Length: 248
Ligand code: SF4
Ligand code: FES
Image (cartoon, rainbow, N blue to C red):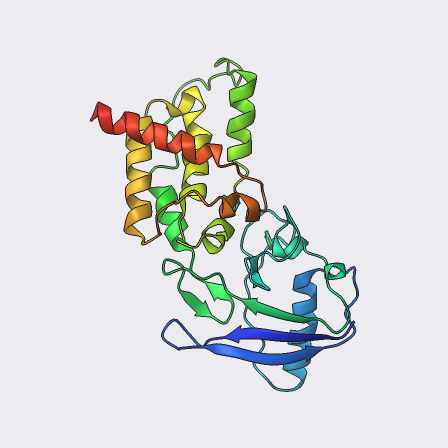
């Protein structure tokens, strides 16, 4: 396949940035989207042009770093996949593909397609943990019985990889889906009960402080989430927040 690419280039957070046109040839349908960018970068290096900066690490849908806006959609046209799992067979010979970084005030551009998602880390640090006494004998893993439904829901919430597609998909750049997944994974388990109130208050406070927008229930986040994190988590976080606020 031969493709036309319109790629966002930006020197740093202060630079205004803009789209540049590129052409790439010899792309196979079995290649991943990132491998297609590797081919382009190889060509650019050979031509003495600065390669396009983009984030990636695991290249298997686990780390959440390969977040790109492709033809206006976070992680591109496929469902329940990250950019690194997107195959070029989703495109046709001669297609033009527009590639941008995720857009949100709380995710400033570092360079080209690389954004700073440390706002998510700070939300996690505000309450995404439990305190466990690890001195003395280790408690048996099965000593605390957990209802199967709760264990399953906590597990699904914990599959959030912090990619930020929910924020990029939302017209308000809300981080409610991400934050609610991180609250839910503990709210559903007895181990999370001890710090439940301070966790939800602190994480929501940090989320607001980072400059993410409000949730207006459009549901775009759930549709674009590569891990299928459910809106039910937002409802659970709202209940947790209300109960923590009432408890004072
Ligand atoms: S909720 Fe989904 S889209 Fe949002 S950060 Fe987690 S995995 Fe990514
Ligand atoms: S590179 Fe890790 S999820 Fe894509």
